[in-house]
Length: 594
Ligand code: M6R
Image (cartoon, rainbow, N blue to C red):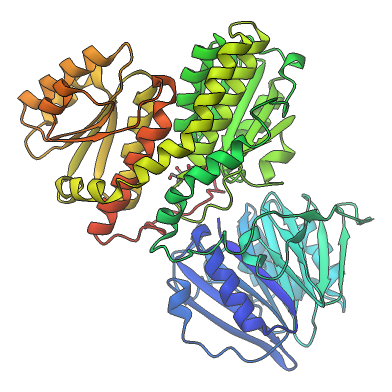
């Protein structure tokens, strides 16, 4: 989950590394550090805390260096456990992302040979292995070192008095940025966008060498290979806050564009995947966190529009489920495409003989190598740890898939699809209307700021939206909250309702509306403050303490609009509570450990 950046060139390595690391901080923020190559050694600066805690630092001038921002796995966050690591001689330095499964055995062997370790991390073995095997050529040494490793790694190594960066990857992302008289390497694209939009993605088993003027790559057999040069259409402005106080707020406000971009070229004909060539009698949707909530909404959408039964699984559970229930078509949803559990689930699904499709936001991310087909959401980079615009665009893709499947199996006629497409086309405008209500939503949040428990309730397609609203509030405002199907409260959680337990209720005018009104009445009778989000209704307004009305859309499309309101609620509540909105405690954007 850590962020890595490496630079070789003449643009002032210190600044490039610090800027790159700031762009990667969403990958982990419990410690950070940089190593800069000098003629007589390697300058190292590292510290527990965020990148800003490294500053002000005076990094000596130099042309080549590596940097790291950490999310602790082995060893607590501390100055000692921060990357980069230098070995005993001080000639080399490394940064690493991933987990070396057999590090204990290797560490014991190295200690026996006289190596002295300064940290509790698995990563530090890498620099000692380099020292142990080095016979004059860092590139060859890296080849020897990775033969010893079991586990996942993206590793970058530098050497005293050399402008080379030698890197290797296995199951952890690493991308090379091609510059002019400079080259870069990073775990993620945002770190290199200031310098270039041309990249090469490394494959598992690859080793590469970068100098300012040359990039060379070898595959796992040691054969020189050319990896395709890919042009990235993200800009460096996409990766900046652009005047917003937080990335999360910027990303919430980017949703009209993200929806528009994800629909672009897909509304007349959606031909990203030819579903006719797959057995889609039953569909399984697998993912984690917010992407799992998108899967849950997706189940309602596909069952409604295509009448195809869907099963949903959390990726971390699917892997251990019985393989007896064979579903021929499996959709994996992951914003980052790097979530370890979802990638493992993709492999498991293939193993079970399923056809697999990934919905992801990150081009060439690891999951794209594991599946038969990929559909990209076009949300642009999402830096805030809380997923917002990517959830919305995942739903957009699920609507498109469902319509295509509905057309294929004749559940839908062309004219129905046309109507739905028109609804999709109107969504950016509706979202803007809600964004304009941000100040009102902020005021409503006064009721949530001091609460210790909050319930989110909904029914049918808005039940998963209740789950998502509760997750967002937990994640960034640190308030315990639970999402429930409204009909379930009376089966237990009612015991928790008091006048200090606000309930956010989602009511849209579908076939559950009347039942929901009944449920809200029961909650109101227990004295809980009720904040309602949904379609305009007199009766509902009377029952609610506050009411946030969404633009009128068919209930099937309401999750996108309701969720925008819940995102703003979580944001404003977290802000009023003074929480670290973009980097909530203990979390990281992509969860690459199982
Ligand atoms: O990158 P992914 O979509 O696979 O990530 C899955 C979850 O880790 C992610 O959605 C997480 O729950 C979000 N931070 C929630 O806002």
